[in-house]
Length: 67
Image 1: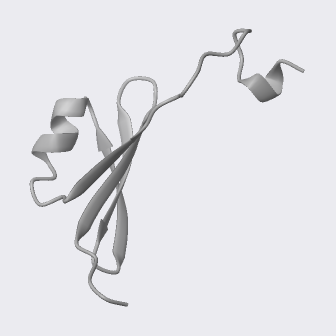
Image 2: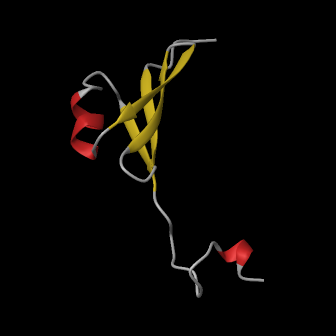
Image 3: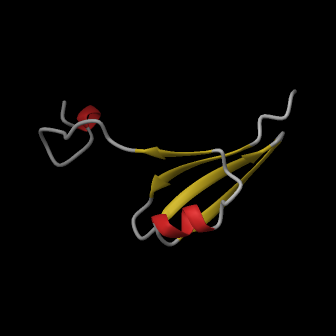
């Protein structure tokens, strides 16, 4: 596989962020205390992808839990 550079994907997880970093063909995970730390700890990342809900549920649970 061609080297695709460094990318990071993160998702909010209660008191911080869980992230997966891809550097070339290697994947590893990391815990970040806040969004600033995600950026600071990944200065070579060409992409930092953040999982963000695109809408709010009509109930307090996930949409799949409302039915």
